[in-house]
Image (cartoon, rainbow, N blue to C red; front, side):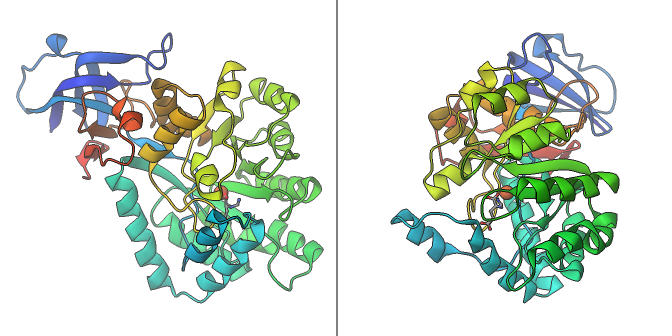
Length: 387
Ligand code: NIG
Ligand code: FE
């Protein structure tokens, strides 16, 4: 049945090309067959016709469902002691990943599946309706294929991150061969993307390029973890290979910013990482002012950012990275969709999948203004109520 949502105090659609962050006051939105069928001022909405259910949202704000384009949700255990040590001065290092690898290898499918289901419920409760999940916490051929298969049970956006770190006791060159060969073939049926942690302590530019090219040759889209712990080659490599996104972008040179601005590669910032590793935040203002497309994601993982909260990411983006509320909401919805090369989500234009977050607030500003407060009132996915 079609549903007319009315009484929307402030509607964000991301669908006005001339004014991407604009809002509509006193709006209504018609959903038919899981898609947005009409949107505009409530006064113009036609309520006539049989079979249209009217839902009055009582003046609340509505935004598109969040698109979290970067998570690592298939793992076991946690690293709370590592976090605590970091808060008293121990720096974050890529090597901590190996601890989660050991715990994940020891967990059976049911344990990982239950954990994943818990995270999905957590995402939905906070307004996330589309999310990506990476492998990368097993690092053996059978294990990475298992993580990819489990992730594919909960999302279409699965990323192969065999190149997370070189596992303990394995020869580097042999591991890169494995990631480009047998392991890639084993995960291939379950994944859409290939990613590399291109960073000191993880993979070099040469290794990363080889792995990404192997993934692309197998038909996968390219994503890169780059420029997190220091200035490095990740951004330039991502742009050169036509990656959909390069994620972190904490340490950028002017040449990196210029390369991004001249490309179709999205810069995805992950402020949960800087919060949880006590590092300086990326300069999102510099990126936006240079004309770069910016997305915001949670990077939810047990090491560097164990939060799945997109509302928290928006609050951090506004407080710490110089973004306006409108830019931050756009980056957490439409920006995430661009980073996943998806046109059907991240906006509420006619034809979009009807993924709506109803906030218990009159304006999206409250996402930054009331940090840490559970403001998600209702969540719809394809017109079906999830929360
Ligand atoms: O995005 N960079 C690689 N992966 C994660 C960290 C993973 C971990 O520490 O377990 C990240 O920050
Ligand atoms: Fe990550």
